[in-house]
Structure formats: structure tokens, C-alpha cells
Length: 167
Image (cartoon, rainbow, N blue to C red; front, side, top):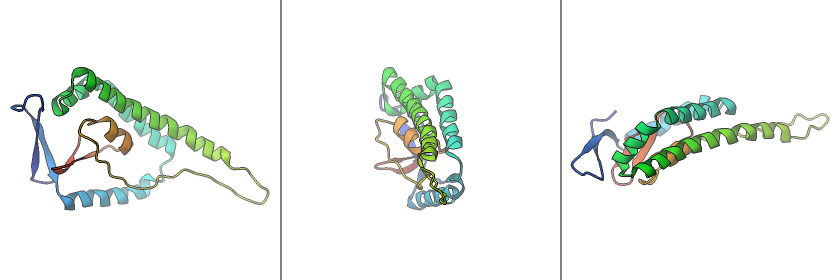
């Protein structure tokens, strides 16, 4: 945690403070990436079907709270109600799509190997590692959620203010 904060202002009403988020410096960001690398050691061994389940669970949570999330998008990104609703729907769709692609892809990999006498052949798609995403300001949810693939804690990096802890 940090004692530095970024004030989130409603771009449609510059006098309205939406909230405050912790501001990370380079050391905190590096620590977060290092922690993610450590967690990856066990996370990468979780079956794709289970990881996809987290995507579905996150999509279901967004779906249940869609109007609330869309309202925050309107306040924080200055989007209209229709754009905010579309942004939230896109995040839900991305999560569902990625999960629904992972399961058959994993099954096809298991079926794709041709058995040969005297050989044991196995094909698996594996997680490759930790990544960092800096989403554009005008896609505050969809790109972040889809690319982070159901991480329960998301990091949003703003171009000028450094990294901040997301919701």
C-alpha cells in the first residue's frame, strides 16, 4: 500500500470527486509483478477448465452488477449511459469468450496427438507467464478484464500518473 493517492475526477463535472485510488511507484509496481511471478508457479498448474471457471464467475459478477459498474464508468470515464452499458457488456463478452475458447482448445489439444506404438505423445497449451496491460483511457473495463483473464485484482496504469490499484 502507499500513502500517495490519485484523485479521480468526473470528466463531465470537474467539480465532482469520484474517489481516490492508491498511487504506486516503480518499486510497488515491480513488487506486484514479482508477486505475480511467484503466484504464477502454482496458478499455471491449475487446469484450463478451472481457470475458465474464474472467467465465468467474474463475468457473472459483472452481469449481476452491470448497472452499478456502468454507472461508475459514466462517472470515471465520462461515457454516456449507452457507451457505459456497451463497455460493461463488452467486458462480460470478453470474459465469456475467452473462457469458452479455452475449454475446447484444451480438449482439442488432447485429441490432436496421434498415438504411435512405443511412444507417449502429449500436447498441452500452457500459460506463458505474467503480463502487464496499460488499457487506453476510453476502454476502462473491457480491455483490462479480458486481457488480465480473471485475475481477482486488476492493475490499471495511467499514462501520466503511474500505476494505480484498480477495482
